[in-house]
Image 1 (cartoon, each protein chain N blue to C red):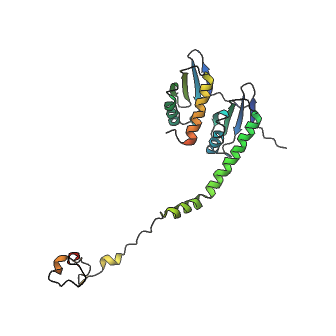
Image 2: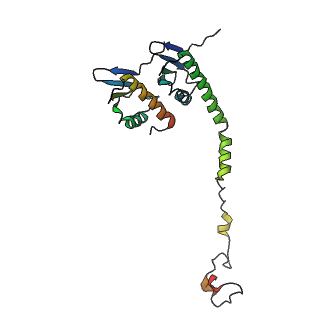
Image 3: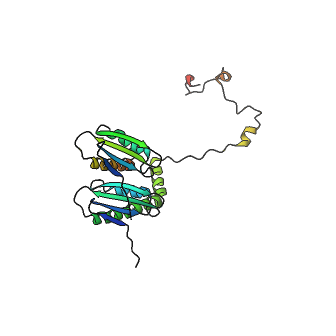
Length: 147
Length: 85
């Protein structure tokens, strides 16, 4: 039977060392798990971020060090699952937030190349100006100022 | 055998000296945390590329080794809460 022994007790120093494989638990997960122990222990993180991260938990009071070490490893699993689930559902959460805020990007209007080159012999595309309306009768119901 | 020794005391100087791995504790976070705690104790931060060294001189009767470990916990909180910058 293969054994995993990644714990080392230091009863004299009231601390325990835990070796963590960073390929299994990313640094973000290790920080989160360690953060949970700030009220019960002093936490020191060291080691090699590529090969082996060593976490020291030095109990602030009277603690069962082995139990605390196993609790830390449970927290590692807990946050690892959280990170994986967060990654899986990130697109869904993004879609929900976009729907709620309605911040979808409108598709850009395609420019009509033919429109620019279109002939306009009657000058229809030219803007209608007030000068060219002088002398015309204002239709009933239309305010003269709106002209 | 696992080995870690980041906190030591310098009795001659009356300081706690914390050695930090910059891969886990970025310099900007260390400096920001040191600045936040500068009213509680005297802090000196130095760096040699491979390690960051923080010397903490207690202003009151606080035990020196505890001061070093407390600083480590503040660092972790700063990293986790994004208050290091």
